[in-house]
Image (cartoon, rainbow, N blue to C red; front, side, top):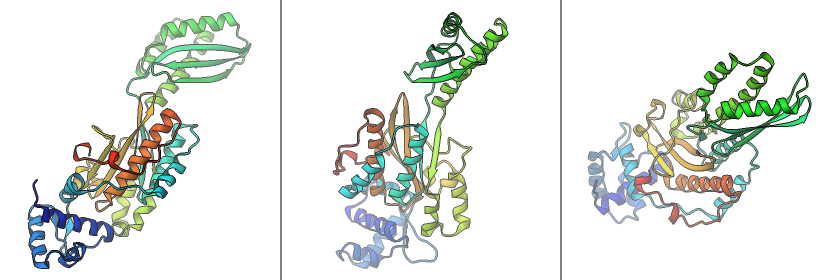
Length: 359
C-alpha cells in the first residue's frame, strides 16, 4: 500500500499518541503532535482517507480515531523506527541474564519473569524440543557390586547419567554383557520405536536380565522425552489488569485463562523465517488473542533446540521499544547458552532493526 508522506506522518502521530494514552485521537491532538504544521481541517480530511483505507477505526462514542490491526501492521512494517536501548536498559537486561545455567526449565522460567518485568506485559518463554532424537550409545560404569552408573549419549551429543542402586550384587562381566546388548539393540531408535523393541526383548530375556534392561531403557526414554518436550512458562499475568483495555475483568479473564493454560503447550507459535515476529490482532490464530498483539523473539539454546520469548498485550503496545528489548534479551540468551557470555553491550539498534519481511 502506497501512502503520501503526509498521510504517513498523520498515521504515525495517531498510532504513537494512542500507544501512549489509550484514548481515541482527534485532529487537534494530531496537530499538536506535528507542531501545528498542518491545519485541523487538512488533518480531518486525511484521517477520513486513512479510515476509508482501513488503517483507522472510529469508536462509536468518540469523534477521535484509533488504529486498526491493518494500521498497526503498516506502522510496524513501514513507519516504526528502531528503538535505541539506553545504557540503563542494556545493563538491566545484562543483570537479568547472569543466570546460573543449571536447568533449562529454571532458566526459561526466569527469562519469562524478567521479560515481563522489562515490558510490563504478560510474557511467555518456551523451548521447542528436538524433532527426532535417538540414543547414540550406552555406557554402564560399575561403582560397587550393587551399584552402577547409567550414561547415555544422544545423537545430538547430549549426555545424561544416573546412579542406580540394586537390591543384589552384579558382576563386572554381567554389566558388560548388559552394556553390549543395549548398544546392539536400543541405539538409533526414536522414542516411539523403543517400546516395541523392549517388548520384543521381553519375550527372550530372563526375568532378572529383563529387569535390568528395562531399568536402563526406561532412563533412556526419560532422556529422549525431556529433549523432545516443549516447555512453556508464562509470567506477569497480573500486568493485564493494569492496562485500560483489561480493567474490566470480564474482558481480561478469557485472555488470562488462555495464557495460564498449562495443558496446551502449543498455544504460542514459534517464529518462522526470522528471529523476530509480530502478530497483530486478527493475525493471531487463537480466538483469545484476536484483540491482542503478540511479539516474539527466538534464540538458540544449542543441542538442536531453539527457544522463544515473547509478550502479549494490547494492539497499541510500543512495538519499537518491545522489539528492541526482546531482540537484545534473545541475543543475550543465545550467547549464554552457546558461549557462556553476555552481549557486547551495544546500544545502537541498527543491526536489530526489524524489517517487514522478518515480522
